[in-house]
Image (cartoon, rainbow, N blue to C red; front, side, top):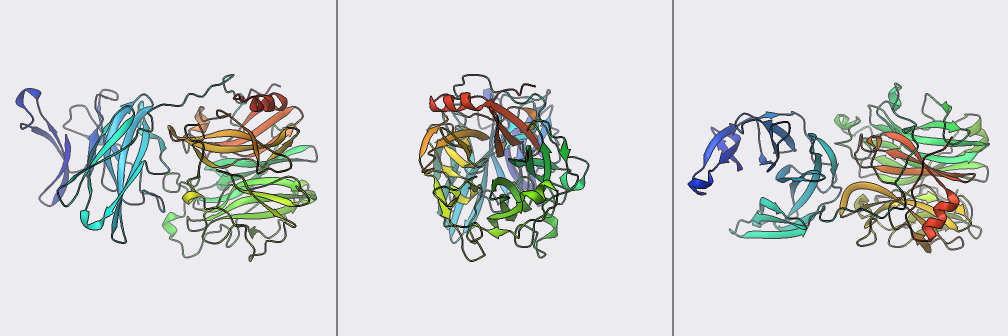
Length: 538
């Protein structure tokens, strides 16, 4: 048993042991640890390299190890810290730690007092059993929230983890024991039906961080389009200052990128992701734990690009902290782009002030004489039709649905896409319909961004004709789990000859490729089967 106590005014984490023969009223306390502060939980029936494992924390969550349950040594760094403007932005306290087939599941609480109410949010993270100091994933939304009057002063006592559900016990100021129940996120690990094993380009990743400071931490989530016989990538890049900029690379075959510039081709501008001068300078750095938006805190994020009327139109997320997450757009003439003259149009904002909006895409051609902007994906497709892309001038904005605090939209219950995160690459026109890639997570297999596909009606793309019954791509390789684990995220795809080529970010750190024969892919999608992306053949 672990518990906290105070001795000589100093908080201590104590460990007590009882022998079954002595009964529950006789306990021995062999371990008093003043250097371990806060609530803690030893992982039951589990040892790592001959050592017991203890997860603990007062403000953040840490891990400690011991060979004898008496002397403990800590890894020294926080595995998880409160996240600004998220459900767990208050001190984190460990509730339980359970060894599962997938890893060590750590439940934690974050308690907030607002307007006379107390909210107890239950979060979860998964640590690797082979390395308990490595966080595989962490929930983007609470597993459960218990709301009560502030005077009730709820305290979390502990939890019992069953195969299908989790029971958490709380106490209140009125000496009441409160029991809350919710589904175990690993109650039925998803194993989607597949026609074939999923394959990637064998030389992945095709791009990784370089020695140049502006892209020395991460390169990922590239926009892609074809022009002048080449595939052009505009990719998101991160340096130690935590600001997202865009880099450039191009390829003749869409696979081997023989051109990559050593400088950014698009930088954030004031009001469109450039850092505010009054922002706390302590947060101006790259940190994927503190800053969940790809490790950054400002800049132009997740670009998508299409070519229209002799120009490349770029939609992107203008990010300047979680109180400024807006959809923006700029463009450049294709002549200037091919000549490497980076003369971008002044950017404009598409989404309304005060809204958190991401993942908007422009269709690559007009529909019924108007430009089409897809700005919502679930439960219905939402498209804004405009006569001119120059009509956005700071006064006109697109009316869109709120994006559930950035956590995405409710998807199909009991499917792999029960939480739809947003659109992937801009739609690709095919004879069978608009091919739209999208990102989703599964409540039964949390912490993994997966990629699916839809076919939309050519004349009315708000109509979904077909939808993948299983993910077409999901995080499995090392480069999809390094940086931010469990992420495959596409912002760009092209159809080159017979091939669908998908460019995606792996783990918010690398750029990779996957490919499928377009005809086979579409046929499989229409027939309701999962279609794998296969190796690129030279």
